[in-house]
Image 1 (cartoon, rainbow, N blue to C red):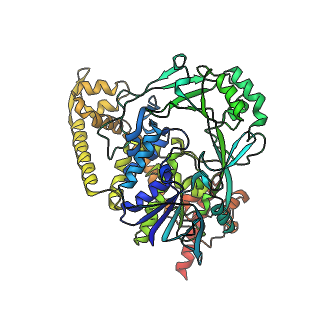
Image 2 (cartoon, helix red, strand yellow):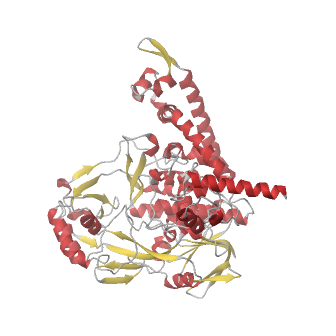
Image 3 (cartoon, helix red, strand yellow):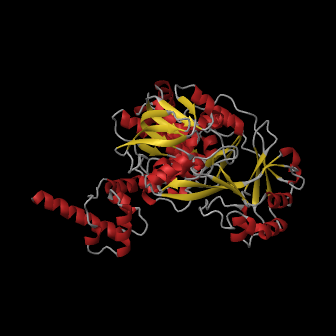
Length: 606
């Protein structure tokens, strides 16, 4: 008997299992193959726009994705450097095998029980999950179960006319479990994702491509536990499609699994197949392709930007038409995967299903795409499953507190019409949610939940105390600028002086680089952040106003039919949730608030 069973060893599953372990409970992780735990099924990179924020938050809460990234990173780049600090993002190219090995090492250091097998059934009593049954006939019992099956839930791979059952090349699919979920009348649908061909590095001509080196002195992905050593850093390369490439793809589009009608699932809008790009952006003469090495000791690259479900011959023809790839050797051809997902509106903010007690869902099964989104969900499910067993309050992250809060709120309130991907634009309070402030926002909470050790928390506190002392000094330091007396803080607020100039004026040594950059950003944006905090307080007032479950929206005079329809469909539990529904106007929120107030007064009068 286990406290928690986690089904699936992908990015969601490993974070869920590790979170349960950190809270002192026993966990069983069930996976098809132990050797594929932590596998990067798609591109070998962690982070990027909007995504590094999630990874840093998982790290601040004691998770393992950032640590594995630092152990396997072979190129790091900070993106959006010309924009404000809040939307800058770290992207790390990883050695695919070393990342997987790092995840497994971190798991094997724990007491998590890892069991190979396929879950074919779930054991239910009075709509309460009690455990699972494996194909071998073995049953495993638990108090809570977390389902993180990724693309393996009734997954089918497509390449031209080829149709193979599976969620990833070399791995099978989970059909019986999918059928069981359909039998339970859970609201389900189909989504798709895709991957490009893998090409031998030794067979391509990188000399004709644009070199893309990493940053000279990049930060680590993990702030809570930065690494002491790094792997050798290497370059990526950029090439482009051309008119000939586009002609070949256009001539073969009818053979694409998606365009021939074999796939009904919707794919990720922001990571389209090359067929999509050519057909939807026909005015463009070329598209960028990022040649990303798969590892330091691996003769393989991932050509990011040409995912496809065309037949092998057509893939070979269009790939060879690309500059630098004329004589390339394709190790594995690209394919699309269609898989089942469950409407995330059927989940509570803890990621427990509303229909089956003690069953939690995390990752692509909830309609998301991306390693980082999956890891964040796994963490939330693992934390809340453990909290409930320990008879402690559930943990829900506010939208103003973390991108994790934005992710979960978007999924459970709005659902998905396509695979969900995180962007900084999804967070209305993003100035407060920089990737660099994750620890300041979340590590105290992690400590209170038992997610990080006392030693780690003390080290964080010590570093934070040093920073606060440094910040005081910056504000006190007096200097002269154009013969006028001023302080360090006043200089950093100015837009006509670069922070590097201020640093020289204040005679700050390089030993304080990490503190100075943070101080510069905090002081520069302090006015804007203060304004956002006021907006957060206003928003929280609405979050505290509960909508009675028996409130009859059609009876509220002044609400349009459209607004009533959306409210009836989504059934928001607070005014704050209602205000975030598309089409629900501030005027409508005001009418609902007045109705609630009147009903409360009537109850008091009685």
